[in-house]
Amino acid sequence: MEQDPFETVSSSSSSMRTHEYNGKKQVNSSSLSSKFPLTCWEIAGASGVVLTFAIGLLGVYLTLPDSDYSFLKLPTTLEDLHILRDNLERYTSDYTIQVLVGYCTVYIFMQTFMIPGTVFMSLLAGSLFGVLRGVTLVVFAATAGASSCYFLSKLIGRPLISSLWPDKLVFFQDQVAKRREGLLNYMLFLRLTPTLPNMFINVASPIVNVPYHTFLLATCIGLIPAAYVTVKAGITLGELESIGDLYDITSIGTLFLIGLASVTPTLISKKMPS
Image (cartoon, rainbow, N blue to C red; front, side):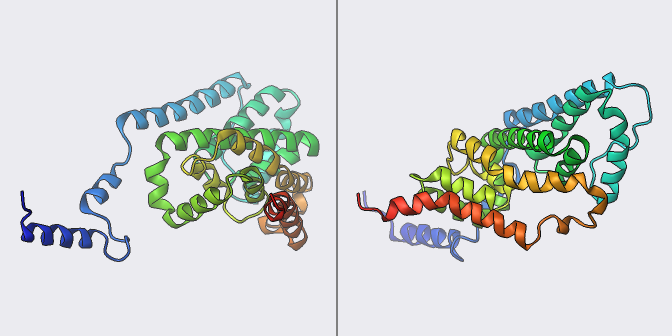
């Protein structure tokens, strides 16, 4: 059956309107669906994660002695951190397990839901537990939180990330596709350097098909240098005047050098004849 020319022109015109401005303008139906990107099951899953964290924190709170805990809040400034540290020091020796569980739960929660301020939690670990235990604690909590964020993003993240960081997502997807053979080295490089924010890496990795075992190993190893710098600074918290003092030119340069060292094997293997 012959197609009506008018119908062809109309459909072509409609298609052109849909993709005008190089795809910057979306079809009305797409924009409508992006307002409600999550299904009921996805919302229920995310709510279940929040409820699990809430129950965990409540359990820790109920095992602590009766006292005034008005100081318990997420630190957003160095002043808040000083107040929190001074009060928690009284409980760390007698209620070590509760403080550790509470600390890890809060840190993992912040990482899972991309809540800013984990740098203050890393400083707190150094101030309360010292360098060795502090770095171990921070790397464990940060890796667990990043993993939780990874799987939550795999469940509900695609429409949210596509609307929040479309350009970064395209860039990250292209880079991952190019570096499939040396993906671990590339992920290590990203963790060691500020090329892409850690929060973005956590939520975008499952979307661009970074395997979890690669994500986990790169996260666990790649976070150690930055965790060491931050935790060590927490020991001398009183001398810290601003968060900007944490990373001077020397620290940033060192992290970049370590990051470059992590991708060197991949670069060499590409230049070697097969």
